[in-house]
Image (cartoon, rainbow, N blue to C red; front, top):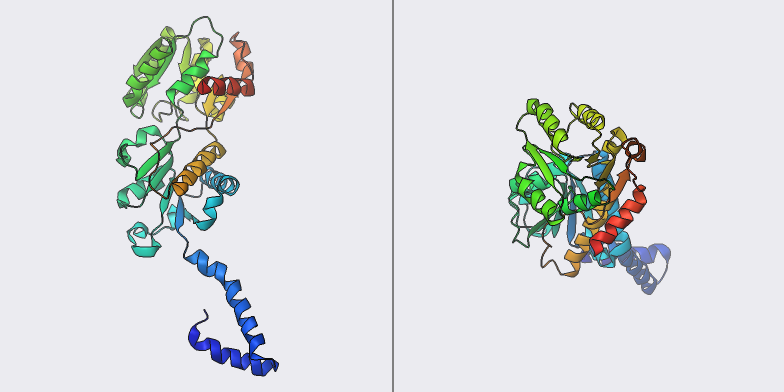
Length: 336
């Protein structure tokens, strides 16, 4: 660091050493100061934290998508320092710091980072991302607050149901199996299905031993099975039997990830890390251009992907368009 106390003596020594003039020395010193200016200015820039829950590839992919998208869409972000942090390397009191060390906005990525930020009770605006809708209650997310918002991992029910409407089947009684993580959403799904005139049959379980009997009842009373991200119902121990039983009953399964389609589900709508990263970047930009005056209400993912298993569809005698066509038609339905 160069201070005013050392500048003049330093300049004189330089002048003597190079046998140049004081004017030349001043030019050298000015050039040096100008070269340091960007670093001085950057250190004083407002900061946005991207706090990952860990080093898992999904967190890294979301962060990479955020940074890439900000480079493309947010010229205003040049005035901000975007700081990438890992929860494993973040001190427990990091958010209790005061003064200039506080960020302007905290973007948590994943459930662990969201809980860390929520428990700190920091007044800094926060955007919780890559979290299931079911975890919002535990974060005490005040829907009326402009100081906190979320971008959920789950797909909105209306999107899933509209996708089901694109399936050409004679009957469309929708079967849904709820567990502890999704039971509170039962009324919301029923309302959405009613609005689209889709008949629905539901079962609820509270422990894994109940999944088998409840699944048999659902398969007897429905034509399509909608899988929801409930870890008690759909996990590595149950998914194979659920897919196999559904197939034997000639019931297509609508999953919530590409891996489910690869395992035997007929169809899935989901948001990739890139999809979610773009949405986060757009929200950050909106926060910046509004001068930090508020965050939008919590949202489901704005962008999505569709994956279809047409081999499974053919074996169930269902004429299913390819993934890209389904996505385009679904986007058109959402734009209406």
